[in-house]
Length: 268
Image 1 (cartoon, one colour):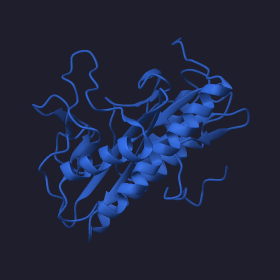
Image 2 (cartoon, rainbow, N blue to C red):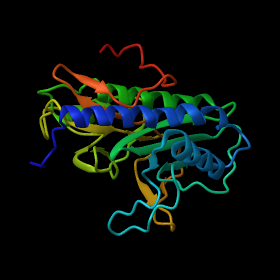
Image 3 (cartoon, rainbow, N blue to C red):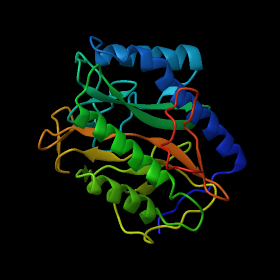
């Protein structure tokens, strides 16, 4: 059994603030995410907003887990067949592209971690469908969060929905516990069997962030040591929220005025 921290009321309040700020960065950047902009420019704008407007710190900047080189930018920008950890740079977004912006801020020591998909201009219906199904997957996972349920219930709900739609679930990357530490126990797998893994208890906080591929689930790492792509070059999508286990269910901590609403089938 992994040691999973139970957050105190004070820590939960700190995580609420950080989560809302993380979501507000995505609100702020939304009008800039369009054809013609570079991923580097989106990074610059987000970085300045975090530091100058929010007084928050971009968690990815210089983040360096064992065996990695420090991540060089403030946000992750994953375009088309990039699954995750795309490094912002000279890439220009064009009509028909899809991009995930993954934002984590640190405020007063607490991490607020979330991501959204952005569809650029006129995208093909199959592109929008992948993003929509992935969004539903995330929310179906969130809907499993309540005391007494198990972490395997989250993965099972996500996997069922993705595979029924003809998609595959990335196995190598998962959600994670979060607080004053960016990545901590537990790991939140986006596949699995119901009734397995750790039991959820009030005060746990973790991310749910399914990465869903239109093709096969296999991945390949790029030479930069960070960027992860689909091996078959199919499109990939991801959505992410940070979630608190409450006494009766869940509270999504990464919500703000511009957050897309939950799907109609979610009743909290």
